[in-house]
Length: 241
Image (spheres, rainbow, N blue to C red):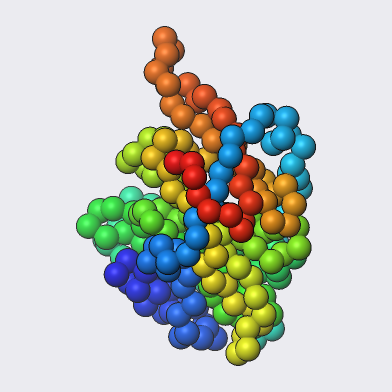
């Protein structure tokens, strides 16, 4: 219901947008697919993996209370995010997060408040056909910005549970050329743990990822992150929690 609610509000602030719902990342779809298989590795393996900055800044033009993004289907206007206090429940606007040159997609988050609680979703805006691809979250906030594989065939993203420390969800989306649209995204693999959270994810090659994970341990000076490292091939089944 949260995703449908946000989508309806978003349409009133974006002009020239298709009404087609391109949301991906639903839990029931991931549940029907194989899980990622993680194996523990050393810190050196993580350091050797790619850490290339794949996001560029394409700060959009501002027109009054909107920012404007040009696409192959026209200029799209987005209401800027308003975080000022004292507002009623409802849609609060959009935030711009950057641009994937490899995929030709802008990265946005949409934000709204319901019953005093904040919610957000991450959206990839296709700069060629103007379509919006929403990545569903398992929590209230948007998932972290996804990381494309070196060949652009996959996107990996994560979400750390806010109310459950040392827990995470990792999702992998497959990027394909659609028959009716330039790009289509679909669920490919996933993983969920209640034993550690994600600090960062890197691609080792086109078919494997490495995670810098952490757990909180109580120490003399409060909570300190203890790091471990895990690697996974995209085409094997899960054995680690």
